[in-house]
Length: 110
Image 1: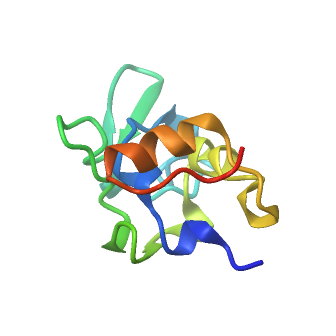
Image 2: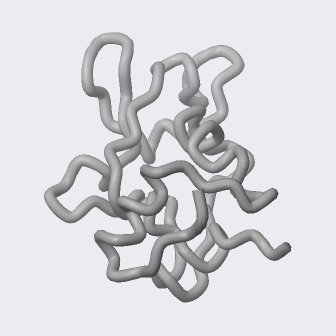
């Protein structure tokens, strides 16, 4: 099965992505590029672009619903890693379909 996420990307243009600041590359062991994150609190950050009225992560490359990729896939924060963990085997969570609906895409089997 091909990974539907590589065509979709709706989740990257639907939700706020908040993560612990220790995941940023300016912290020991962190990998998320700090230039792509904004501080929310003393301990939390968010991916730039994800807290707008029409969210779109700054790391998303391509057109939602057609062909997309994450520009920082290997360095992406934990919420992104956890969100699509089962998608490679065809299991999609309900939040995936909410994001797809917001972009006019049909639902996938949950």
